[in-house]
Image 1: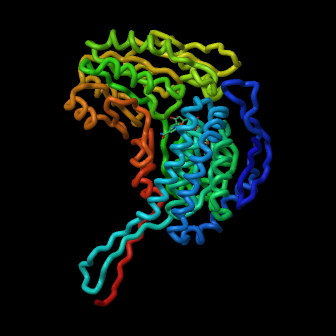
Image 2: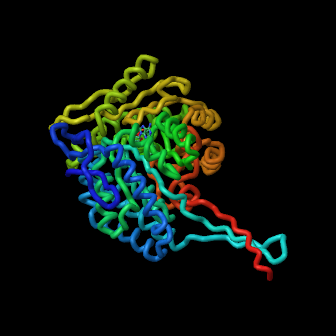
Image 3: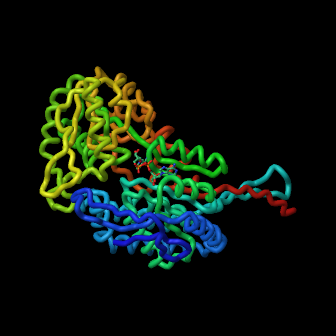
Length: 477
Ligand code: NAD
């Protein structure tokens, strides 16, 4: 596919042509793209600004119908979107198609939000007054997205932004521009007026920075270090900020857990989608009584997982999404071993029928909470086990990490689950299920440094994507 930049309703070529390759088969070019020029980026931001008055005043039914149509087209084209996603990012086809459907649901949900938009009416302490609180669009939204959910993350940001009457300039990751280009095509096909959605391809600097400077709000998903740069940049112009950042998510496994279930959810959280989910499990905190049986079973299940070409029907784990990430994973393994983590399985690249970025599911055991490998995000198919005495120690260890994204517990005890829910400092807590696997109709997010600002998705999305206006009305009655 040959992608371009969508600026004021027109697809335009830019400068600095680049290609994406299939991580399952490095010989296959998936897309050829070119980055937006500085003036293209400026035009995209100006187009979004010019389109704002009409779009924010657009009839609510028309806006809802349009978003619903985008969702419908995403459902119709789910196999095409999912296949492109699998070829460009490396998720298995089932995961890719599932992500396309998830993206569609975000548009369907936000179509409903247009209709459900509410205000508040208050009586006043002053005779003859009442007070009305309404929500208004923020304005131009800069959306900056990572490579690991190439259609879902752009979709949930764009759907929420448009639902609340904002216009958008999207900058996706250069590793996976294909799905963002497809989303632009689908938005056009659904009849979105020109300039309401613009797409610019390019690097974090200068392109990401330039759209932050021009926007009224920036919604960013990516690494925590990049998030700090985005926050500093946005501070210059006091641009409203929402960020979803890195994680080092823990799953606690207590002695009373169902062993089969615990092994299943640990393996799912740690290795499915090649460990490239921000909510994936990287730390397994396991109490003494179940530790040995759990580790043995988990290690065996890791060895059985089918790693291979993302489009092969038997594949359970696709390749690492890109070469820099694979190099980071291998360096992570080396450093963890050097500090004394015991490699139980994995840690190496795998050869398959095609030349791809395949890595074995990796498990470290015998680690301690304070070790570097338990304090640093890997973002690959790598997790480590920490042995603890009891629930209190498990909660302490789960919180003993700078990240605060998601945390899970496997237990048959309702009171243990409730205690964990209450004392975990993560933004999302999951009981007897993988730490990853979030739904689109409830808030998604975390405390700093795993997130910053209002949550995304669900009803919570109105906090970032709209502004409150309080009106005092002296009607004299
Ligand atoms: P990244 O931070 O390298 O890049 C994310 C995006 O930011 C890309 O589009 C990139 O071009 C852009 N960018 C880079 N520098 C920039 C700058 N100075 N100004 C503006 N934009 C800039 O992240 P990645 O490697 O694409 O994604 C992996 C990271 O994303 C992991 O840390 C993962 O945990 C995180 N993530 C978090 C969530 C969540 O919901 N919390 C979801 C998915 C991914």
